[in-house]
Length: 290
Image (tube, rainbow, N blue to C red):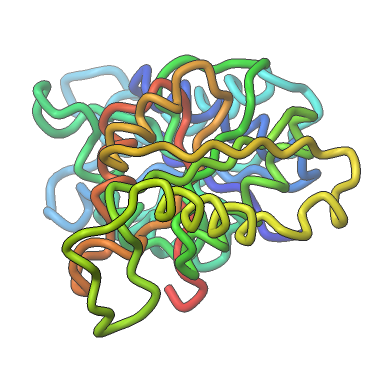
């Protein structure tokens, strides 16, 4: 219970939304909140103090510290019960946050920061951190909601099983329902080297996919007797279907990678699509060996 919820801030509107999500996450779990600003300028050997021709409160170091102070004030305004501390940490933003993730319960980011290009729907820092963090990463996307279910994507992989466990805890803490969603477009591979049929019975495959979904959520109601778990099997493209399922949800949870894709990729296509297009905050649950 001592591991904090860490939120990365840069003074942008997106990081303000991240602070609000981080405060809720920390207070619901009775965990401390740690506000972090990655300060890259010392590595570039530029002057950090105020200009001799400007006000004494100027300069890059003072600006960075003000960003943290503003974020702490915002956190206290969101919920006075939060136990928050902050720090300016020297280093590249993504590297600083990945380092923080090694000792964090969860890491919270805004969908976009001050850096990057305006055409990007999610900042490069968010993608890098979601791909390399050692803890779950929450991205404050879309509209914050007090109502609606927690949605979790299920494909039967170890990553998705961890996502189901995380999503169930989220639903219980938020006092809402859990909606488990499995998307299929053909027979699922159950292991390396599986030979999948070229012709198959869609009804039979749908039954098998439904069985996979119920097996992945088996035991949740025993562990959380008051948790209502809904199941939804969808035929189509997984990324598009999960983005659609985020409509009206409080949170959508996925594993960093599922069964599909290439082994060298640290983020699957579904998690990347949600980071860019989801209508609600997204949680990417990293592998236990990250």
